[in-house]
Image: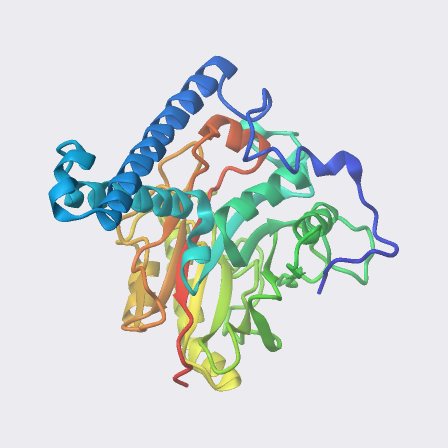
Length: 395
């Protein structure tokens, strides 16, 4: 596992990017042309300034109402209705709450923990990136800002490459710097771990988990899911190239805990029907192994989350997980790509669990960053998130 290390860890200043400003201030590298951005910002500022003025007026009316008798109320309020003043204050409060929630600060307003999954396209090997991001190395500062803005506290990772050039380690230099940035000047305790692949000498596209240890606590060690897969043979499907691992986390003493399995299933490279068939087989293999996962952790709250590469919710792979007692939280096939309509990223959760407040994933699209710029600077995938409630543990 990897955390903040103040001794012997390179700061990699060329990798940090505009950490403080990437999601808070306009930048010619990050946002739409300056004139458009500033026009939008001015309109938003004026909108909230108007709300503040209305709130001040309403407060004044209510104060005068409390300090004066009924006879003088009409005169001092100048025809304003006290109920109308209250409504104005409520409107202002609601607007602020919605602003915080949409800005990724929903956790501040509740006791929920946001859990996410993000495929960070070929992180550590930019020359293998495709599309608009080809050969563009992602900056740690931009990645850190996106994670901060999402409010996520536990994050399943996909496509993280082992680029430390140390055979006995499995880390990513950019992600090391992301952890440093997330922990700087805060009480956060971010760390991460990457899981071995089916071929242990393969350094490309690992899955993993990243978490803030101040909010969520690992329970035990990562568990390699025991799958019954056919042996590797030439010209035969190679199942679970990115082998699934499970980890258990607690959201607090005596509170909700969950087991999360990050997945990165068979891609759509090759014949379409053959890819679908292999994903269906992978889903069956994982579903059959879940009872052993439950027994290992003594817990039934299992979340399967990540890049499934599923093209639609009617695929056999999805049906297999549903048959195994899970709900697909991207049942509406909401697109999860920055530059495309594919609903690859999904979350499967046990049915009828009170810990899960929202029954649908959220695709986290930064409002001030165009899909094209996101695809270039960060990834071809957006992060997807779910909300898990802190409740008394029931198992």
